[in-house]
Every structure is written in C-alpha cells, then in structure tokens.
Image 1 (tube, rainbow, N blue to C red):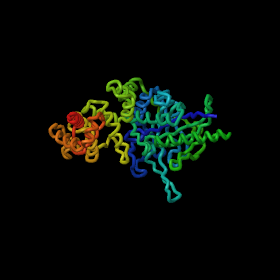
Image 2: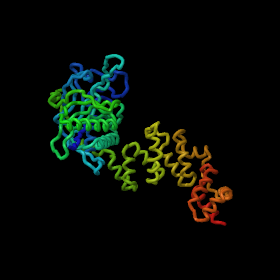
Image 3: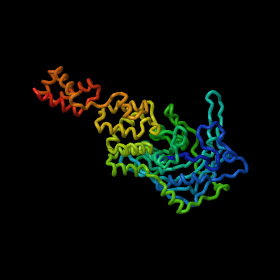
Length: 478
C-alpha cells in the first residue's frame, strides 16, 4: 500500500517592532536575562495591556501580500495553559476572530506552480524562554522574550511533500523580508515553524491521524524532520498499528523525533475573549493605505526581471529569492546595464563566495554592487580579460578595494598592443615547429595550445581575441 503525506504548517514570525506588543519594553535580542521586562509583560496583578499599533500594521501588510481578507473587527483572546516561562498562566492570542483569513500563495512544485491556501493570520505575544543547565538538573527562566509580538500564519493542509513544505516556507520568508516586517533570523528564533503531518492511503479523501512537529528553526530541519516522520508513520501503518496524535520534538543531532506531549485541541486551551483588550476595528481607508504602501514583492519582481530585462526564469527566481540579493543586482545593473552577463557573474562568482566556507551576508559583502559593475565594464572595454577579472574579483573580496585600484596595483592591465604581442607570437611558433606543422596540416584545435603558451608568457594579460587572430595569421604563413 502506498501512502500520501498531508502537511500543514504553522509559522511564527517575530515582528520588527522596537517595543513589545502590549507594553513599551524593548524587543532587542541578546540583552541580559530578565532585563527587557516590566509589570505588564510579567503579568503583575492590576496592570493593563495597550496594543502596539505597528503590530497591527505589519500584520495587515502580510495579510494583503498573501491575498487574505482583513477581518474587522478582530479580537484578542486568552489561550490558557501553564508553563514556567508564561508568567500570566495564559497567552494573549486570537481565536475565533483573527485579523486575517482565507489567503494563498504560490510555490514551484514538482508538477509546476501550486497554490497553497492560508487559513488564517493572527497576532499574539511570545512566551519566555527556558535555559537548561547541562551540568546540573536545573533550568532557568529568561522572560525577555515574553510579550514580543508574533504573527502566526497557518496554512491549509495543501502540502504533499517535504519539498513543497520547504518551498512554501522559503516563499513566506522572502515575503516577510521584502515587506521588512520580520528579520527572518532563524537562529535567533525570529522565524520558526510547527508542522502538522499525517499519512493516508493514496486516493483516500479522509485525513489520517496527525502529529505535530514543534519549533523547527531551519529549512533543512523542517525537511529532514518531515522526511523522518513520513517514514516513521508509514512503518507503523504497514505493521497494522495506529499513529498516536501527539506533539513531537525534532532531535537534529540524532535525526529522530521524540514525543513531547499529547496533542492539544482548541478546547484544551479554554479560549475566551480577553476582557482587557477591546476589539480591533480596521476601516477600508486604513486597509487601502496599507495596500498602497506595499513594496514590489518577490513574484512581481521576478516577472519584471523576465519581461523587462530578458532574464531566463531560473536567473530571475534566484536573484529575487532574497530582497537583498535583488537590490544588489539592480544597484549593479545601474552601473553595468547588461542583465544576463551581470546575472551570470552574480550566480557563479558572487554566489559561490556567499555560500562558501566563510559564508558572507550579501549586505556585508566587501564588493559593492557599484564596484562589481565597474569590474565588468573593464572586461567589456578590454582593460582586463575575463580570466584576469576573476583574479581581480578575489582580490576585491579580500581587500575591499575597487577593481581599478587592484588592476593598477597588480599591473593586470590587458596587453592589447599588437606589436608587443607579435614578437612573443613569433618566438612561440619558432619554438614549436611540430605543433605549427599540425595546424598547417588542418588540425586547427592546436591553435588553443599556442594561445595557452602566450597566456603563460604574459601571465594571463594578453588579449585572448587578439592572440587568436595573431596566431592564425602568422601560422598561415609558410
């Protein structure tokens, strides 16, 4: 029997506000434990929360960018559960009236473009953090994160493979970064994911029993965890067993899932409207102002790169996957307006360095987009060869200097003087009579050997086009 996975994702994105959702405490990451706190986020008796307007605006942006319907009024609710890092004993979230519902986004799937439904987007506060001491059987509570604003994006169960789930996550991540409402830092927990997964026999409409994979904070871990869980559930079903509905944690070191607790349902949380927060009313004017403020999003930018710049779909998809990379490309394009040549350099030389052992963030790249454009202009002008340009590029990365400075300091200007090269060409032909005879006998590929000799003699500085012309002309003479 073959099985089909059914996957739905719940993504938590920390919003880039300076203060928390219901108080004025800082959201700065990495502050000393329990310093970004006050009576409100610590849940002291008698305090009242005040909603941060930016949280509403940022969530509206994401809702509109993912084709959701804005709900007005929407309302906050108390989600009741006890955990050591939840001081109030409840989390302020949204339940029956979230801020946005019924949206979608499109991903590239194996069979082509696929639309993934978004059930809802809602606002909520984050809980604190438990810090476990590996040397002692003790845990500590850091409440700095308590009250940090989160946006939860809940997908429909439309995903059918770990690869689709990863593509969906990457698309969400890109949209959030383009909107500049979440820094997307997965290591710091700014973008994390819970995955619900079940298996059913192929052709069956009814869903199987699902498990929930909790708090995964990398695209790779999401894919690996889903792959493992598919294998685990499949083995259980093939053996005639039943999958238990439970919450699981992914152990990235051992590549296995471990049971955390039985899976809660909505009634377990005893949701009820928060009496301290009034409903949020959003009028049409506010929605339209927000819609007009949206930047060009990844799909729109990709289509523009294809239609206006003539880039292949693959190039456009790579360059627009990250807002920073797309911005870099367009800044370089202003200096070097040849889109395909620039794209080739960025996707080979530049991307290799960004993803190498000492990976570099594009925002911190020592080569500015203007300097990259200037380097490519030097190739087209014949100042340097394409081969020398790669040497110059490496030096620019290491030193941060511009191309012109590197070329002058290293004496890398391309030799295009026919008289200077002709003397060397004659010497090489004279020193290689057998190869010269082969060329004259019809083996024209030998020309590459002669050009290679010239490049060695000139340390790669000879103009390759001129070198080919000179050798062809001189070898044609008996």
